[in-house]
Image 1 (cartoon, rainbow, N blue to C red):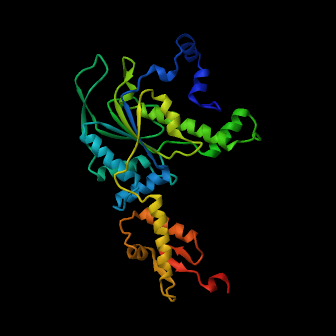
Image 2 (image 1 turned 180 degrees about the horizontal axis):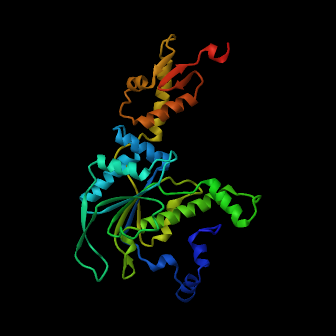
Length: 335
């Protein structure tokens, strides 16, 4: 995409054939394909490169708890394969550390016992017959989302994050398009462009599955799990919905619970109250010890870390050093 405003309407306005379609038939691009048999599950959770890498590592080392992206993905893939579906998973190509995210995701599938499964496919295209043996679970990385048509037998697609460009990259593209390095950059415009490009990435990668096949104007049935975070002013879900006419959208309900904001807030208060009960001569205490004293062992490790950080931010008596809560003494302030 090279247009500054990359909404679907503006793309259509720049395409002669689509202009003629609207002039003669009053139809838009989305009207050409009935998506009534498509069902989308959206988990409103961040799944950027660092999250995917760290959650994969946690899963591989048996440390994954509620809120872990990979833990949920594995369970959803198990359900869909048990239903007799072939599943296509998309994720980022490389992490910020340069490591192959597709490969570590495959390792997680191996650990879960989901590798090596085969699927007998009857080619849906006319003129070809007979079952073909295919992988039942496939992992691909963004970059191939518009380059492969070999997964049209997959009736389930999982997006472990959605690829996006960096703000600096987009800002540079805006300056380059205007041929003016000193042009003003509107942050809201950058967010709008980024969201629109992510929508295109999603549409392209999701269309590698079975829904790419249309019969009598209707896309073949497909279920999709998408994991990304929507924000005010950058709502990918709302941008996507008009592109899939007739499709149903549902909020994904995690199988492994993560503490809600209300529970987190209550626990922060309990941590604060507990710390005031410690003897004066106690100058350090382990975070895990506090967790055990509050009988909060059921809280996910990542959630507990967030609760401790919130406690630290709300007062100036204790600081966090590694896994230890250390009391700030007068000497620490130069007295």
